[in-house]
Image 1 (tube, rainbow, N blue to C red):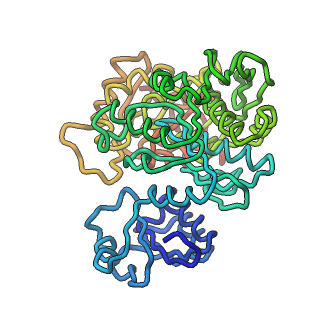
Image 2: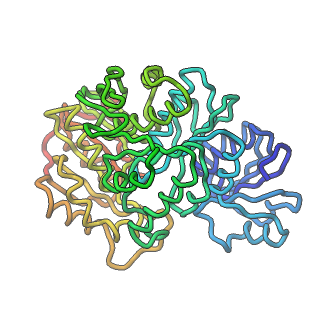
Image 3: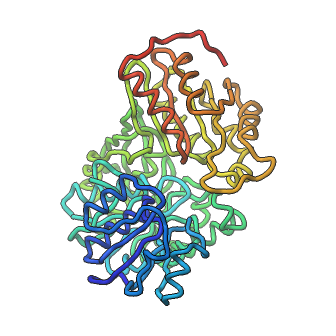
Length: 464
């Protein structure tokens, strides 16, 4: 169904992963149609590239002459277009399974892990592209420096982010498998953390070579089963090691060691220790393609963080950043990056919890995550189409922050209230960051526009 000339329909085509795969198949010569409830930048780009995109859903969009229907993990089994496909005996294939089939046609690098996989995938693609290798790639966020999140090019290597949310990562068999870390998430799919670890282990076992970040305790334990894997870490006994880290706002530098021997001083245009770990994974993966390590390190200088990954929105007396981080470890890592890269700044965080199920499972763990913040504003949960769970709300997160930190914390119910409060509360030299996988970026983007246009003066009349 992904052969040149075949006809494929995407249900939920506007998602970043679905639109990326659709774009690659278009470039491969597949005739693509798709549907989604709303138009967005991704659907506009697909339409301009020759895909036929429908707004809304209808069984009539699924014609009998289709070779396959690809669905996102958000599409239910009783969706009208899925039912129409089954009536016509058209294969219905989840996105990740279709991507796995595509990767079988290439030499491939898969990047998996609870945190950091989008950034690491973008780093690998950037290095290969900068060094003239013409890679293909599928990444879970828009990457301005790469011209988007998806590309089918003429080089040998296809780099893909491998999402574990629906459990189908076990069907992906890359030649080189990267694992950044193992954490608790997607408990609607997995029974517990051990179940997640087994899935990652199976994913690794199906690859010829592995890259493992052993700063993560669970990955370090798992590495014992993969004796030929390339290990990476910071100030640990790893095959690739980063030492002597130095932080200066948007730039992190470190000494890169291979088996105890200094290779080079690396300049990484991204803040924080967590991005050094991502860079080590990327360097190890690229080295396994045959590129000399020093050359790969030079390619990192062209890297630019993907959209919504510690993305600068405004720097006009106040630094305003938006971050996709929505798990406790991710939030903690970003706040530590601010503390080390921007010492002495007051940090104001706006957090929109993502999903009722995730808040129920992890709510207590968000308290410690905000230790490095000075002020935290908590918004209502972004449901992501989940049904409300009785007794679960953002108050659970707010109580955990109050219990486990010394920072000021406040619940704010609406976007308008959030922007008004921040407009009164922020002072020059503050560092404002929004966290969440939902729509919280709209708050900080509005405030950033106000700062850029100079529509208000800083005031200190508002307090938590």
